Length: 236
Image (tube, rainbow, N blue to C red):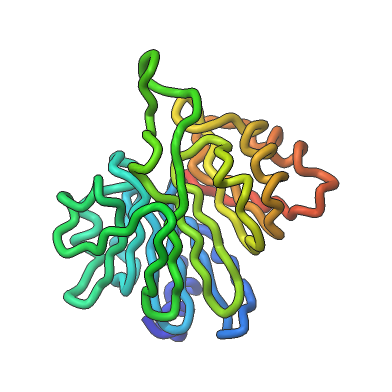
């Protein structure tokens, strides 16, 4: 996808959410919310999707790279992946999702892979306390991946489904973060804010937040120096 082609889609209203642009040493990087936990990253003439599973993709460009965080249906939709991929698309996913994504490259917590101009580090995402029954978790440690994507000297964090785990709080030098919050599966807005305070990104976006009061999150981060950006992730 060329910059001209993507700019045309933006001007025509074909992209589903407001596109934000970030300056990097390698040129601009643009991020467009699609729906829930699904988003599009465009930089250097390449298109990367994170969890393309929710929303409409009819007018969106084919993928050069796809990152999948987990096995649940709001993050993994093989039919949408098949629609977006080409013969050269690189798909990075945890092992638990590999059987639904033929030809993908498995990446585990702590590993880094190069996806064209993007350096992709898989980081932990899991529940500390919440699950469907006593002794069980919605997201087991080591099953899924959050991701830190580095491009042009900037670091972008996509949390996936997680609570405010120690590994998240230990992140450093994050420029832009996308952080989940929804019950009963991940964490409350207040818990998410506490975790964000610990690793202190320059900019944070709540995502994966259906039904949550984002004002709680924004108020908890007021005065911290962290810029909170609210975007529409649930278009009508």
